[in-house]
Image (tube, rainbow, N blue to C red; front, side):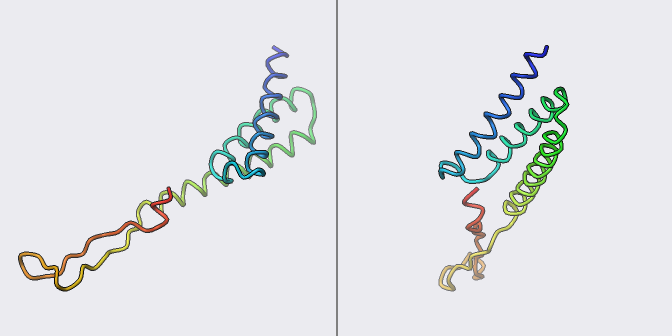
Length: 115
């Protein structure tokens, strides 16, 4: 069982270092993938540190976990807000419907196109 906890700790180290390297090298943006890797890594370090009695490491990784969790929740909230927003496009006056009124065609915002 002890081997499992060691593997867990090393997997957390690899996840966090890979996330940091890929963002630092510009290979990925600091988004949900980065935060999820940090969340996983901090959980793994919390487990490993607790079993080894490394309390400063555990405290640091609890803070790391909370930062990543809050960041993921905030990103999720922004994605839901962006998906709802839409700007109407007013068609020029010479384009009319059968009733002679102008048509309004909704256009998604630029931020929604990036998601």
